[in-house]
Image (cartoon, rainbow, N blue to C red; front, top):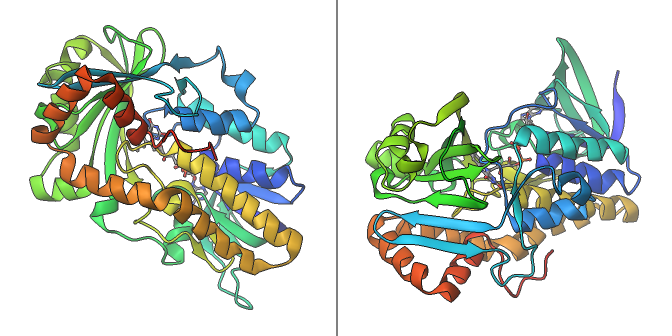
Length: 393
Ligand SMILES: Cc1cc2nc3c(=O)[nH]c(=O)nc-3n(C[C@H](O)[C@H](O)[C@H](O)COP(=O)(O)OP(=O)(O)OC[C@H]3O[C@@H](n4cnc5c(N)ncnc54)[C@H](O)[C@@H]3O)c2cc1C
């Protein structure tokens, strides 16, 4: 059966659910469609930065999150020779004074339930296989497979929130394969990690360079442990990600001491990141991309939940304005909003990590920031894109 929706949103990660909430609460007929059944696993570090907390609280989720998930107070950076730099939230910014670590299996189910509660129609276990050929200058909908049954779903607008390998982006030729904007990471939940703290711990250690490792506390004894790097570094230096993970567990100066004897809970799993805005074009006619599909992961930290939540909301607001006014040229505003908020920072971040991710730079930098707290705060604000002057968007 062909159904006509105001907006079809493909992908129910943070980007898709945020867009669905923004449209459903304004009374539009929204379809939120995902190939998985929720709750489902999503490979991630599960670190929720203060800027993402701000967006989650805006969605009315404060009571759902507080007291239920591990709250974090800041970030610790461990350099092999530079010592420990500790930065406490809100680092002089206007964002909340805390973050969380929330397994994505739970976070994404909470967001999906919120979109459902606001009136979005949710279709789970339905894989979108393509975009329908253009009709009258616009894309009229998507083709999907739901439990072996083929479906044609029609909508006035389409939002591609289907992650870094976006089917929507690929079909419309909106994705770019420049390794400057592509990364890859693996993570594993581990029990019995020593000295678990209330801080996100980041380890740019020499033994795994140019990869960077993390230990994020999930509860009092389990942590999300992972390593990642940018693709251009692998091409140049032939890194193997599984080996980098093993080296992180055994050969690093600071992390190995905490991870010795820890037991994996589940498999080591990996996924791609599309960062820095350069890996995609965010709009084509009546289709908008959000989150990872639009290459909106932070190129320095690999943090993308913030940007998925924000871009989802802005896409929803832009589409709502276009539908209210009947003026579709308003869609041109969506890429402009992304440019305005992110372009400068993402450009700086892309090149800072490209040329600065090097033990010769990181060790002295962290040596200095470990002694000068004001500078440490500045570095934390830059890393988390939480500038003091930012009014939380
Ligand atoms: C190892 C790793 C660690 C990370 N750690 C962090 C971290 O600690 N903090 C942080 O903020 N960010 C982190 N990120 C980045 C973060 O995971 C992403 O930026 C974020 O998930 C983007 O959200 P999204 O909604 O755009 O896409 P996704 O979360 O990827 O959601 C996309 C959804 O689309 C669905 N989908 C895909 N294709 C189709 C299709 N054809 N049809 C229907 N549905 C489809 C998928 O099932 C999925 O549910 C990490 C990434 C990786 C890989």
